[in-house]
Image (cartoon, rainbow, N blue to C red):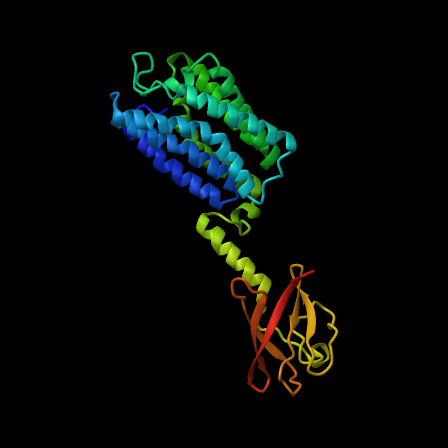
Length: 328
């Protein structure tokens, strides 16, 4: 790929920044894919920094080969993690199983390649020897390209643009560097430029939808935060007012537009909860009929289906009751 340690580390920095920006702007699946591809620049930096065949060079070579072969799987994982991507057809699962099996076999075969160095034929680029291991290397990398393009076409918006970008960069690199055993040389720049090209395309084609993206899960931390937010949205209703007619008996908790049926004075009431659940509020000790209640609902403890509810009456008195959740 890159021709020196400096070029490699600079491209890695700019490429990683582009991937982070792409993942934040409507491109989780593509961002994950290019983020894995860009790590090859870090591997190249280590290889250029250790140009002779030794322990560090051999370890970096194995890491580079594994990252290279995992790239289609990274795109596949990104598609499943990105809620905006299309659902993969069944035949694509079969194609991924075929690629996974081929990748395992080819990787085991190519592990015999100990080092990646600059040769007289490949200079000033590295000779990616594992790309030329065995008679089936052309078939394996053809399958590699078919898998990546198939995932892009079937699952990503404007998949044709992704397919054209990937195919054009590979064909151009093969035509220029194929004879020198350094086909990946042009991808030094393609992997770095790819996220920015997609960002430019999305900016031109997406308009306001791109400049103001919908809230999505963009990182492991945000996945956890998103789950917590979703739980709170489902189970917590704050500052909800109920008028006297909708309130009924002192057991009503929620209403979805029509007054829920009450069970009489002192008995438990029930109502619908958005998201497909129902709730039942145990009879409270409230004896008056305040015109409005404000509810502050706390999430249930782990292993229970009961919520602790404190409601503030109009006269400023706090009361506590229990809510039991059941699926409907």
